[in-house]
Image (tube, rainbow, N blue to C red; front, side):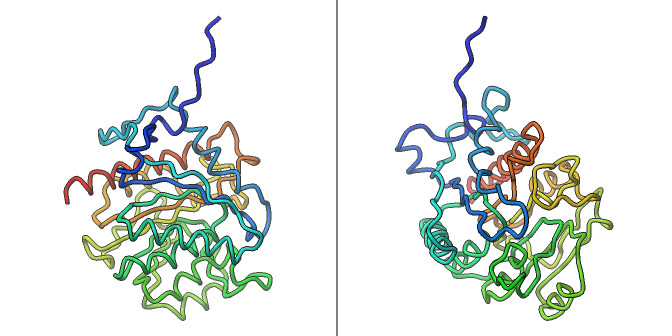
Amino acid sequence: MIADRPLIPFADCFAKEAKDRDQAQIVFAGLPDDSQSSFRRGSRNGPARIRQAYEGNCYNSTTEGGVDLAHRIADLGDLPEQNSWEKTAEGYCNFARALFHAGKIPFFAGGDHAVTIPIGEALAALGAPVHVIQFDAHPDLYPEFEGNRFSHACTAARLLEMKHVASLTQIGIRTMNAAQSRYAERFADRVHIFFARAWHESLPPLPHIPMGAPVYLTLDLDAFDPAFAPGVAHPVPGGLAPRPVLNFIQNARWKFIGMDVVEVNPELDVNDQTAILAARLLHEAMGYAFMQNMEI
């Protein structure tokens, strides 16, 4: 009988030596908070499951484009929740701000989509307007939801209120309603919405984002059809397939400054399908960021 092999987290991309972690420009961290979820909770367990499900005995460290990230990514661990959302968000913002000041390219795993709000605030540290691209089934454009301005249903609304967010592009939307449409109209000059029904086979080229502009990517796993990502709190049929989104990331033409994947709920997942997809998207984006940095 063959003995079980030891677990190799995240396809062996994480640096093992302290000096390699310190020198790595690309970093990974978990933001395990789901206190702002409006329905099913459990996404706080997403970061740990993403690391473990994308297991190095099954997946290797080389991206589709041939970039080998073995031991090149610094895993900074998970930031603990505090005793209130305000304190948790402040900690996330300060942590991300420090990374941006240090010239790192951070990749985060949530948690629910509210964790993107403090990261969005931290983007101001870059000192330049930033374009945010959001993959999502939901616009997250409620001014407030059930009396909560920081619900995960309000993430995009809060981002649009930030002066340093030059534009917000939403792809995969299929749950727009009147309340959110009214809020989108308020920011009509800065929000660009692409509905899943019109872009299910290919993705829009986004000419409104200048070539080389700084871009932050936030990816809610419910952007995908539940056939590909069942482990989310709010699955919506008719969503995106992974291949066009992977192509979108691999063929990006902007300055990639960071990314998060959110709303992976291991309690609702099937055979780690959603966690593995989240990890694969992170892996390919990390490869793009690495090549981008090599070309500078």
